[in-house]
Amino acid sequence: MTFAERITEITKSPVALFALLGVLILIFAVLKIRKIKFTTQMITLIGVSIALAASLQLITIIKMPQGGSVTAGSMVPIILISLFYGPEVGFLTGFLFGIINFIMTPFAVHPVQVLFDYPLPFMAIGIVGYFRSFNIRGILVGVIIAMLARFTCHFISGVVFFGSYAPKGTSVYLYSLLYNGSYMGLETIITCVIIGILPIKRLAKLVLNKTTLAKL
Image 1: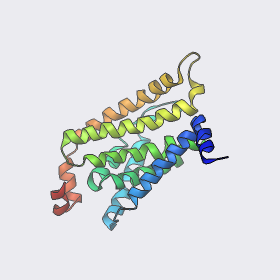
Image 2 (image 1 turned 30 degrees about the vertical axis):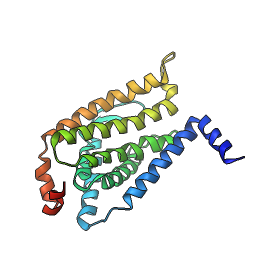
Image 3 (image 1 turned 90 degrees about the vertical axis):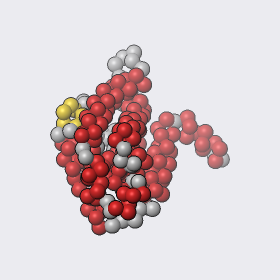
Image 4 (image 1 turned 90 degrees about the horizontal axis):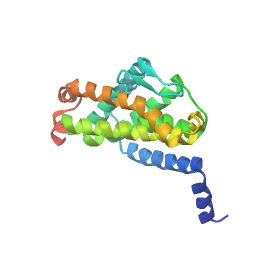
């Protein structure tokens, strides 16, 4: 089979197509993460952020039957680490949290589904790091975009792997949109409220040195 024929076969299968997409995203993230210059403080704060996110994840406001939940702002620690150190560190923190989250609350029907429901959506939170001007409006825009990227991962997983849960006669796209949108919408609102209340600039001054802050 030629290379072109293999590509054609992959595009015919949604699972194979999304597997390829997931791998490409992971490769992109790894290339970004390799540029990180780790410090002891950074490693410590990454660990603290993951621990806080995991703890907040346990405070469940609404739990969905096929996975997913509304939490007490579990994405806030990952957002903060992304704002303080940039998207690359956010990608790494989100990826590690995704692995921890899978260990804590495993829900697996396929390896590609695990990829799109755990590491990838939480890695997407690192996108907030591209909005690290510490202007609250810009940060909130970044939060919404990052949460939308997370929702997209869950939406893809819902369409490809959880379509059988859709009521008879209901489009799997509509089902996934409503199912994942219901809890992700509330999660986004809670996250934005918490971020809007927190003294981001003051926290940044505690974490970052004056030279780094001046560059932002």
